[in-house]
Image (cartoon, rainbow, N blue to C red):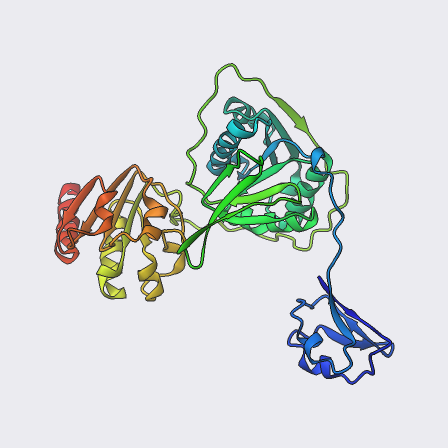
Length: 394
């Protein structure tokens, strides 16, 4: 959509300029002009006394959807290695192939990655499209978006999925805009509708209280980013054959940002990569009591998690939130301290390998998914556990 000016009606009263909250209207050469700041909010349309401004639908070119085929997944790289989330996306693609029966194709960018691509074939990718170039040494949203959009326009995939990581969240929306299609971000599941063959994209909405199922009927590719740890890492296949296709950047990319220096932050545990997570909830009563959770996590070389209630109370930052509106995790051990177990929280951690729950309410829902449940006051149980672990280390 866009705002169109009917110049024959406009008398340059400037009321639209005064009322526009975004500074998107200006006068150039004695004419009203709408600039790139416009969000098409429509306020100017409502207040124009001469009806000289109208909201106009933008006509998007209709695509021949029959040209689009195959299930693509974006394989991330970090420091010249293929990230584990890439194999989770391959697992999701395998699920879709069972109902759609189209080829699974990986697309990957990086530097010094050519000799590492066979593992994608070994785990089930039937084709691997890759671009190897020094330009991918550091992540750049524009470089990645231009490169992926170029491949999409050339090969026309039916479906494209990617991990909802910092990289995926950053550039995949730009790709959707460049190829004029829709995107469902932060999905907790994907599937294929058996009647229509369309991609069903499931994600939480209304603060995690409802699950929405979204489809993209009229545009391709059908695109979704999927939360890490939703799908297991793809298993190796037997007797597999695949094709590795090298592409080149033969088009100009004007990088808007240059990386001058990189600094690696040490001793930071990624919640989604942690093998042990100790989480605190409303039962901690106040923020200062998270120190107890942090102490236990430090002893176990784990990460600190939290329920939404604890984050909303301001006791700990959002990056620690586990659940539908936070991070989905799958550690080897998950220790829930004073967390009742609302469905939104369970959705983010119930696939953990081993769950330990400590709660004084014997009817707390968290016990239904726990492998080991301790009915007791966390202010008694956790200090004893900390003390015993310290004694074992001596």
